[in-house]
Structures are given as structure tokens and as C-alpha cells.
Length: 208
Image 1: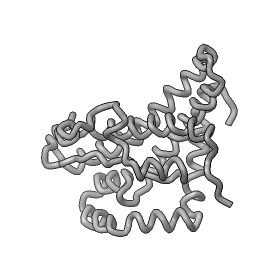
Image 2: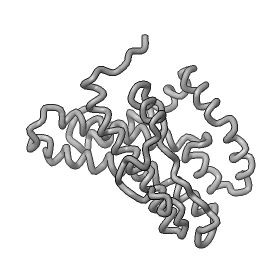
Image 3: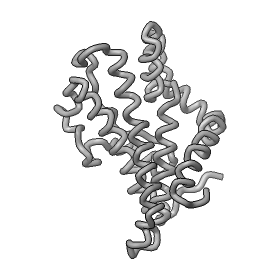
């Protein structure tokens, strides 16, 4: 039976989720801006301030049900210097890559014992959750289903199929919800998440 998280769980999840959303969306915007598209910068999204990136409903869903979303970063590929399909591929890759970088840095902080220097009993758990949540977001977003980053990566790898992939966007959320509630998503997602998380936990010197 589904149960809502406790107050303690919410307080620990809150910073971990904010970190993952902020770095993920910032990375999208930064790479797009680097490639010549100023849309994210013009709309105030090229920032590590989490507030511009948070969608209130999506954030609440993430806290309560572990399934939600942030405000998508606006990207106009017509500004890109060079190949637009390659540019969108790089922008799409940037979000999951940023989350894996955050997971790596967090693992190194645990390895160095930074949590032992902070007089707060839940710091180690918070760092542990930060690794797990960032890995979940990275792998989830690599699924080739619109509107996830994986679909844009797929379009960049196979530009001739872009029309078909974009056409799936109408049904993307329906497909994701069906996969979620039938349990198929978990069977695909969690083995990969546990494997990748396990690598970061080994780096951190802790057991999963």
C-alpha cells in the first residue's frame, strides 16, 4: 500500500531534489547558451538559483510520489552555431551528465568524510540520498520517450527520424504513466539505477 513520506523524509528529500533539478536545468541552459542560443539566459534560467527552475505542481509530485518535473528550459536550436541536431543532442545530454557529476562530487565528499565535520545527524543520509536521486534523474531522463532528454538524444543520433520522434510527444506522458503504473518502468529503471548508484557508493566507501 502506498504511504506518504514522513516529515523527516520530506526534510531530507527537499534539498536533494532541489539540487538535482537545479543542476539538471542549469546544464541544459548553459550548453544551449554556449552553442549560441540565448533563450534560457534571456528568461533568467541560466542560474543556480533553484526558484526559476521549479514547477510548483511538478515539485510537489516529486516530493510526495517520487514522480514529477521541473520547468523545461527554453531552447531555440535556430540560434545554434553549426549542426542543429548535434546541438540539441549536446543540450539534451547536458542535464543527465550534470546529475552524474553531482553524484560523483557527492560521493567524493562522503569519501573525504565531510559529513563528520558537520554537527548535524542526517548529513550522511542527505549525501547518500543526493547520490541516489541524481542517478535516478539521470537514468530516467535518458529513456527515449518524449518529453524526456533521451528522445532528444535519439533525434540527434538519427536526424532523419526526427519527425517521427517529435510526433510521439503527444503520447509521451501517457506512455510514461502507463509504464509507471504497470510496473514496467520500475523493472527497467531500478536495475540500472542500482548498478550505477553502486559504483558511486563504492567510490564513497560505503555499502549500498
